[in-house]
Image (cartoon, rainbow, N blue to C red; front, side):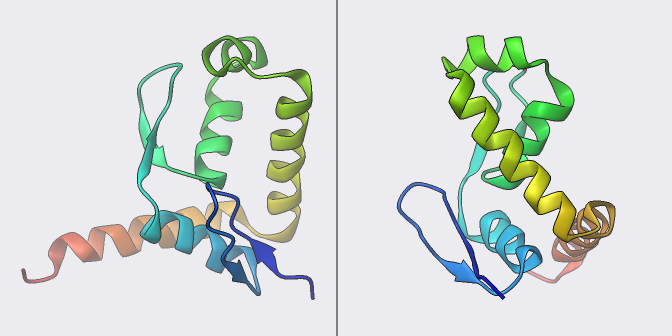
Length: 106
């Protein structure tokens, strides 16, 4: 199986599955503030998912000064990830983990 590689800045971390990559991006990288609406989301795939599910392509292009090629590349990445996993299950797992982190003793 081809490894997944983190594309945030110059990270380049490789994982054997996309779930591990999403977890890496969520846990190891700073959050991203959406330039369209100001919502703070984990960087990487989840930021791309937010942008294309919550906003129009035109809003994304204006806010990020993105080219059509950059939009297509991110849409393709989103499709590739979502063809590999059950995203609802991954999101539920992330939410469960984040909630349990809040309950952990400091």
